[in-house]
Image (cartoon, rainbow, N blue to C red; front, side):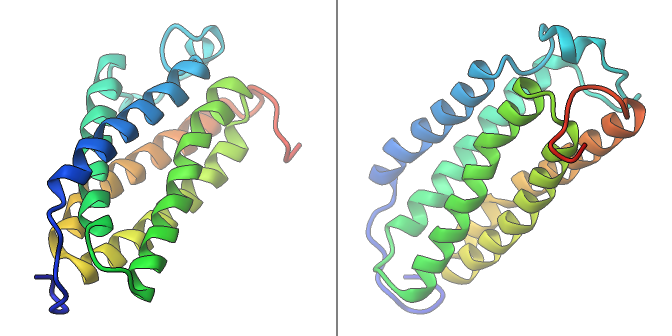
Length: 173
C-alpha cells in the first residue's frame, strides 16, 4: 500500500530494468561528452579546493543513478493517477536536463549554460522528489542523496565559473 491507500504492484521486477537503464544512460552521457579528468579543456580549468578526486564522481553517480532507478520503479509500479503522471513528468524532465549537463559542460565547454541547467535540474528534481514522497515515502527518500549531490555539483559549477570566467564558450556571451 502507498500512503494514499492505493495498491502497489511489485516494483522489484521493474527495477531490474530501470536501475541498469539509468546507470547506462548516465554513463553514456558522461562518456560521449568526454567528461571529467582526462578532458584537456577541463584539466586546464582552475578547480576549487573542495573539488573531489575524479574517481569519486564515477562511484557517486553510479550509486545515485541506482537509487533514482529504484525510486522510479516504485512509482512506475503504482496504479496510474494524475499525481503519478505529474511525478513522472517531473522526474523525466529533470533526467533530460541531467543527461544534457555533461555534453553542455564538457562537450560544448559552456559553463554558464551548464549552471542554468543544473539549477533548473535541482529545482525540478526537488519537485519530483516531493511528488515521489507523496506517492511513496521511500521513493522520495531515495532521491534525497541525489538532491544533496546536485546542490554540491551546482556549487562546483558556480565556483568553476567564478574561477574561470573566460573559459569556454557560452550561448550567453
